[in-house]
Image 1 (cartoon, rainbow, N blue to C red):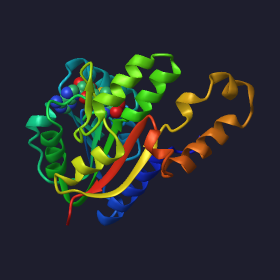
Image 2: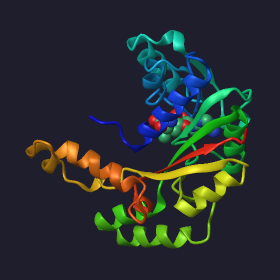
Image 3: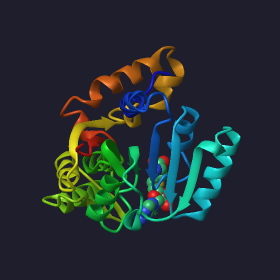
Length: 240
Ligand SMILES: C[S@@+](CC[C@H](N)C(=O)[O-])C[C@H]1O[C@@H](n2cnc3c(N)ncnc32)[C@H](O)[C@@H]1O
């Protein structure tokens, strides 16, 4: 299976970092890295990954996964919080995936991610999209919920919170990232149509998975499709 839009961007960023380091492993800091969904494959790909994560259960799963993948020596786990992040500015790539939805303060967390990146380093942010959630509720027949989510979000740049989970739109996410001094290099969608395609379509048709992956890639950077993707992805850079 070809890499999706987010993996493509991260692969390119890490290849550039490896070159800058003269072939040494790129340094990745994964904040709110959970059980290692991103961290372990990046370690397998040869990166030195530090995961900062408050949940002991998630850290235990991360340890098991890293051991199974044979990369315990390339994964450092730190029990901690984005809001109290005390990382030096040395990471080639800082991940905040699925993080801004749950932190107490988006600006504080984003500023911490920005500080942890080396000058010229990158910050990758992946968040749930409010407009996708509105569409999914409507499609599921939850029309009152859909309308409430739409109305609650109007004019709230730092994301809309519903049942403890914050969601963002393109303009709000871009503004929040810029507000901490990062340069937004790319803002794309992740999961534009995948969640909408019935499973039977993929099961019954040879080549359908490949066609869907290609459609996703084509739609990821194409507004207005990008703007209603399930998740929004920003790659931002700390000025050198
Ligand atoms: C939705 S999961 C995302 C996990 C992983 N980054 C991924 O994309 O699969 C959110 C993670 O953030 C962690 N988390 C919650 N509050 C946090 C905070 N203030 N600082 C850092 N991590 C936090 C949770 O424990 C959880 O593991």
